[in-house]
Image (cartoon, rainbow, N blue to C red; front, side, top):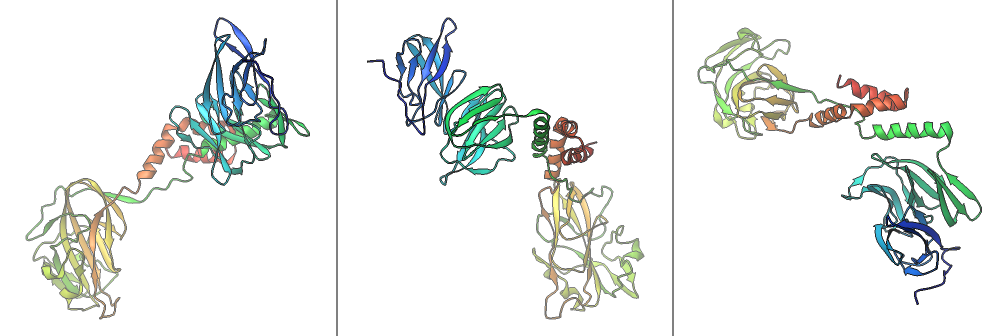
Length: 446
């Protein structure tokens, strides 16, 4: 027998039938679809398909076009002939396929769900601002979509998502317990609940204004909250510098203390004066072996530092001055930078002023260097800062580092590529917080 009665039952009321019109381009016919997956030819009652897409009985069928939504499955019906109907599963897991995207409630094992949008072709999840975790409950009513909106269920509510290239959750509408069918009129959904007939849809100017404000919030969401550029010196090598007599030239190795230095000291402490003022100043001085200096009533001559005071990890500043802690000493070397890159200065102890090609750097500073020679000067103020029993040692090195402004540059590029979106925000929501942010971001690329 290929004829069968239209059975009723299911959760709280009728489970069908719903009418579907299908065509093969030459002829068309009407089908009646029951909530348990029966597909019946409407004009004579012939059963064409049975239990299509229904994993359990009791579903209220919802029809949009030639797609029937049965529980957590969407089935697209096609007509081959009057006696042959094709059925293709288009959605699963409580999803609805609208154009090129699935709209669904992504649930965990505890039954809590989040409104979710994924690309049908790739499965890539599309971020959906303002989507919150909700209790899925019993899953009524069914997920559905119209021309511009998808309607996704949760307990006692329906989430309304604006579809399209940039999906946006625009509202959550509370509903009563649902046991009946759903009807669409354009972008309005009508639901027959136990006690009421409800309509979910945008209302008048207020609804349009609300949608614009939420749309502005959604458009601004991917942009950075603030743009912060990390201060970083870009120091050029001294192309004209020719190191003098016995001046060490050391290859720059990441994190390694230069192994050869010239040393001058100890000298008296005078923090108001430049200890290299007598030879042109700390920023311009380029001493060599035998260069004499005078400072604060004292005098010293640059000479090679005994290598026993240097390791790859630190310099022993106590050794050359015989632990005379109330003194100033000078250390000088030349670094040969092999490659263009970003480096971070590491120095463990306070009281050490460091200049690279005359530019003063602080511990933790990032610098961008190019291939060439760099004069490195360290002015060490022992100054009684440490008890005699604590060794006065420190690392002075440049470590390879990531560009701290990499994200800043990425953000600037993103803003430049999407400037039209920021201008759209200014137009659709003038005077709003989002428009103010859009204006500030656009100024960064002017």
